Length: 347
Ligand code: MRU
Image (cartoon, rainbow, N blue to C red; front, side, top):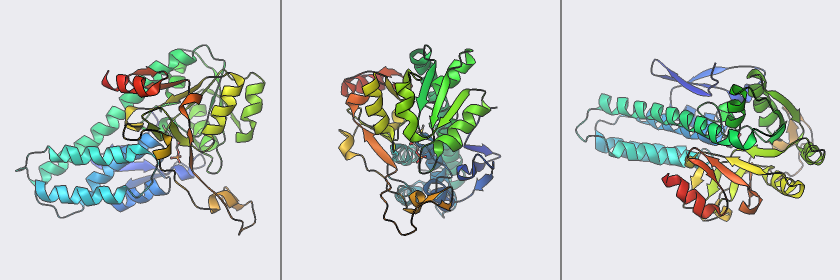
């Protein structure tokens, strides 16, 4: 069965609380924009495309629970809803893409439509955003599988799988495509401190899908490469600048440096909703800093002096010269990315 982090049933919106995985599969109905904001902020829903999908439904909920009566008042409500949701997390550009998309969609609705018709249209569009993301991920899987099919070992970081998207994933999509073709490379899944998206989520979803997955601590990646165990590194992205510089989970940059040293390709897999053409290079990407306690503790247990100062950036930026290719739904972009990404977007 297709694993999905967010789904709808009889006009209700549900998520799985990813902070509880892999121990507990805990489903929660989200009924307000405040609940969606909280779910994104606390990483119940996480991963750039999934955050975008959640935001699309958050915009609908913001409208549903407001007193708007027509197209004009809906516009004001969606402006407020967007400003509010935009404060949930700063780095994944998919959040801002989804907010803008829903506002733009609402602007195009008939001005004389009544409240019920407008709400139905918003809900249908949020579902379309989700479904398009799933189709996008499948296309990324097809394009990426060709690059990975000769690898006996592949390294990935964080979770850019089904749980981080509508379904199927970005970095994990080519691995699922290969599995469908009967090809089963060994996937090394970095644990991904501090919040362990690799060991909690990537290991969980790949194992559940019958993949050959091994979890390693982040500091083992260099040794795994030196031993010749992996022939490719593939990760997702939270925001890709126009020149290909890529923000992704903290530790990706170190992997890029290690991969370059060992002559191993680094692939970024991401939809165009993750490419920020307004951002010329990686210096313009805002990097989220999270709470100190995420580093002072390990799975909720104190693992450092309780008052030790902490630096906890959730993402880093990998410069484009460390990136071999960017796999999108429209095909594979190669350096120089400023040209290839712009070309592929039009494809
Ligand atoms: O903090 P998270 O768990 O939201 O970070 C997720 C990542 O960094 C993913 O690699 C990225 O969003 C791509 S998900 C397809």
